[in-house]
Amino acid sequence: MAITVGRLKALLGMEELSFNLEGRQVEERGDHVVEHLRFRLSDGGEVRGFLVRPSERRLRRPAVLHCHAHGGRYDIGAAELIEGRPALLDPPGPALAREGHVVLSIDMPTFGARAHEQEDAASKAALWQGKTLFGRMLAEQAAALVWLARHPEVDPKRIAVSGLSMGATLAYFLAAVDAGVAATAHFCCYADMASLIRSGAHDLHGHYMTVPGLLRETSTGEIASLVAPRPQLICVGEEDPLTLPDAVAVALAQTREAYETAGAPNGLVFLSEPGAGHKETPAMRRALLAFLRHYL
Image (cartoon, rainbow, N blue to C red; front, side, top):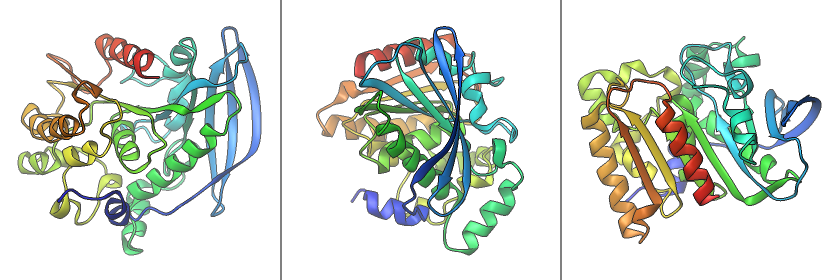
């Protein structure tokens, strides 16, 4: 029997959180606007966020919740939305705003303005308490999704979640556990974890991703299957050590079966790029924009 959303949340140690906006600074940048946001979590923590939107005001636009990457660059965090990072072609916020989207990204624990706390320490503390750092990250992304859905310019039924690397894993896990995600697009981090463990490639992931007992009950391909029948774009590079072809094939077979069973085989879009490593490519960006145009 496939894992349920409730059981997956329990393994992750996810708790319900909410955001209150405490500060906003608006920066006009020609064809788009950047909002520098300061949120207060319901349990007291402060979180930095960035929102990018088209300069022209309009009701009910499609939106994207962008989950930032890891890359060992704890200093970047959500700022990749407007400043980019080496693994991205360019800052995704302005590019998506030019397509008519409202785009939000928030710092995850231990990243960006929250880098005063170390990933290893945060992960260990969560595990001691029967929780996981990854579950905490997902709970915060879920709270950000709720806040974004209430934005006056956003159509709450047309919100996608996207990301690269750590952001990719957050994107498809969030889509799996949260029905408020209309579509998900993720890059460079989709592969069967059991296969990666056998090859040793799992050690390239940070401690944030450790979820005790997860592989006894499910797999990453099955978790991505929980998104079906909602649209899902998966992009991998065939030379990426985090998406070894054999591990991708195992996960993809499981996810494809779920989409076929759900009667939505065309809702799963897959791009495997020969010669590409752990970074966004022009083909991946084109696939993302085409996917969002079609499904949002």
